[in-house]
Every structure is written in structure tokens, then in C-alpha cells.
Amino acid sequence: MTLARYNKKRNFTITSEPPGKKKSSKTKNLYLIQKHAASHLHYDFRLELNGRLLSWAVPKGPSLDPNVKRLAMHVEDHPLDYGSFEGTIPKGQYGGGTVMLWDTGTWESDDPNLEAAYRKGHLKFTLKGKKLKGTWNLVQIKRNPKSWLLIKVDDKYAKPADEYDITEKKTKSVKTNRTMDQIAKKSRAVWNSNREDEKNDKPIMKPKRKSVSKAAKKNSAKKKLSAKVQKKK
Ligand code: MN
Image (cartoon, rainbow, N blue to C red; front, side):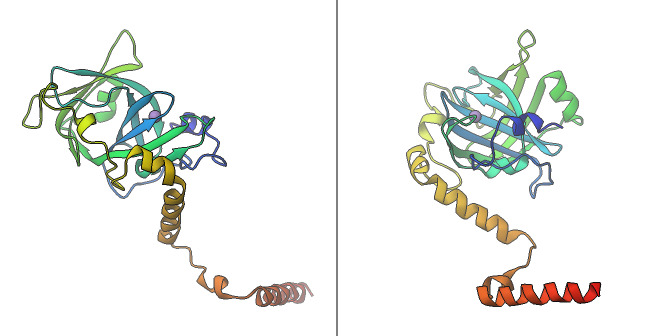
């Protein structure tokens, strides 16, 4: 039931985002960030846990500076399929705007019970992303449960904010190496071609039908029909 809120907010006949279905993903412990130019630009921070993506919207994006606490608004769980989404959500739809896959990789934690840690409002984990690496904390602000803070732990991947701002330095997609503007222009075509790839991955075999002419189809349909009629007799 965890994806009900995700599905309720979206019209899948209009948006090209994937419908929310729980399914086992190929990768475990998926981590990703989607840069999302909706009504306000933000970075959607997502961690795979037990078949769904825990999600936070981080208005300013991550900072590598351990002294900087970035507000992370807790939002509804997203389906694992969402983890590879890049494209444009149509205007007027929930979250309408351009989405870039800004970072992707895996996450790890020493915590033996991550569901409990999540419910308690404190996750400590290590990211193995293309852009973000090292250890991080996500901490819930108790007086305002929707608000969490994303904070870098001081390790070899930490950098002072006045020396390095990763959201300014890294502005391209890890999936397609495109800028937000390029995604906005070409998104639909890429999404469609991705969907074709997905279809080809599925073990549904119907190559023969494609090569059969319309006339042949009609004939075989007639044959099937008469076969059915024969059976009934
Ligand atoms: Mn978003």
C-alpha cells in the first residue's frame, strides 16, 4: 500500500513517469538523486528500502560541507522503476517539469534494522554514487516530522562549501550527460526509446506476428474462428 499515494497523484495516461508497482529491482540498495525543475527547483533524494524508494525533496541539493545542513522534505514513496526516470512531466501534472537523473549508485548502512531506524527518524549510511560518496546522515526534525536534514559526515569526501559547491560544479545527467535544457527539449523521444528497451527485455515473444501481413492475419483469424466453431460442433 506504500505506493498508493504516489499513484493517486499521477495520471499515467498523460505523464511518462512509470506507474507505481512493487517489484524486485535488479540492483539492491539503489541510491539516486533526480534534479527536478518543478514549480521550484529541488533535488529528489531516494534510497531503496524493502521494495520502494524512500524519498526526500532537497530544495538546495546536497552539500559536501559537514557544517551545512540541507533541509530534506519527506515525500511519498516512489516505485523502484522511478529510479531510472529522466524526462519531462507534462505541465499541469503533479510535479510538472524537467527531471534529470543527477546521481545514481548504491547505499550501505551498518544499521541492522533500517526500517526501525527510518521510523525513528535517523539514517546513517555510506553512498557509492557517481557524484556523492562517503558517509551521510539523514535526521528528522522531531517538532516538524516532514522535515529532515541531510548532512555530510566529515570524511575524506567532505569539502568546505566556500571551496566547492557540487550542485554548481556538476550540472549534467549521469544517465545521458545532458543538461536540464537538453533534457527539456529531447526528453520525450529518449523516454519512448527507453520504454522500447524495457519492452525488449521482457520475455514476451511475439516477433512472428509483426512479420505477418494484414491479409494473412485476417486469414488466420478466420481459421481460428472456424476452428472454434468446429470444436463447438
Ligand atoms: Mn520532485
